[in-house]
Length: 486
Ligand code: DUC
Ligand code: ZN
Ligand code: ZN
Ligand code: ZN
Image (cartoon, helix red, strand yellow):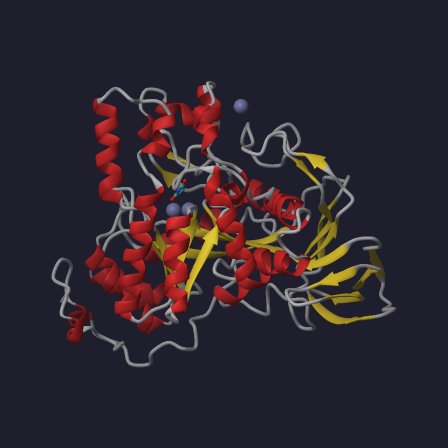
């Protein structure tokens, strides 16, 4: 069966033009005028864009004494309704620390549930020889990026020497190191100080982790990546301090990527001053929403290319779960929603305002993600042979975002009340229409697939032995002794 997406304006990361798209089976067969097929998908008056790819989600992740409420089923469905056809979820090793077991556990949870395609990043939450070995297992099994938490002291945080060793291992394997950049020691100190002073409310969350702490960590991670000779992807860039570090590194010629979140572009720290405890706590995430003065810089970064992608860090906890921190803001599970709203919010606040072109919108929501995460052009592209992950994006459907009409499992929405000026009229995942505006019928859970992301071809060929990378706490600081060469 073939389908033709008919009458729309095709928008890619570099141009837009009037054309039909012929889909055969799961892939794009042809793009051109007046194409014929067995079925037609109406794109008159709409843009036709590559399906959104959210590079950063936490579905069903065990975290801070609970588990993120958004499931793989509700998350991928919510994503599809908002024009996102693929997400890359963070796989977190369990108590045994095993990367292999974590991947199997994520497959076990996700496979029967996913409505569209997914990939994984792996979190590095410690450092020892089996982690070193299992990083190769991850890359061999389609997980080519590793996230390092510089915050969450005593839980997930890794030290600088561990990061260096892990980054060097990434270099050998052709994998991409990523960081959650916040100075975890200083956050921990500030949290303890505030609690000791009886400052227990959610408004102290943001104050305990100011932008300077993020900027310091971003600079430190960049230094470590430079020493290890690797590129670096900095997740959830929220502030000018971190952005400035990225700009400086890129100017030096380093491949440093920055990922602002749609929340940081459109919401700010005044949310934490809301007198309704629930409202403030629902917005507690790390890094926190920042002062408005940080937003212009993030938008400028997307325009100029110093920031490349827009993500959500979708980690959705119910209000009930948030209330674990009623007496102590450090116990509020960190995370907020956005998977469903990312495209509509970026369109409304980016394209409609003239900050971004439609092509830049496509780059930030899809194409750049696919390139940086090494799944391009299978994903993120409208070209013959690519997966037919396609969205008919209708700039005439407006909507008010609300928990009362969203598809997420949680009972609130951090964008509640925001008017958005565009929506997905149709979302296709590998050729199948999985969302049609006004119909609201969910696709078959389990139809989605895990998309392996291969190692980057620039991987150094010679594999360093564990011994050469040294053991934890004894990594050589002598720059002449850095393995794998810089
Ligand atoms: N930050 C969050 O807010 N939630 C999940 C993990 C993270 O780093
Ligand atoms: Zn993080
Ligand atoms: Zn509220
Ligand atoms: Zn995250």
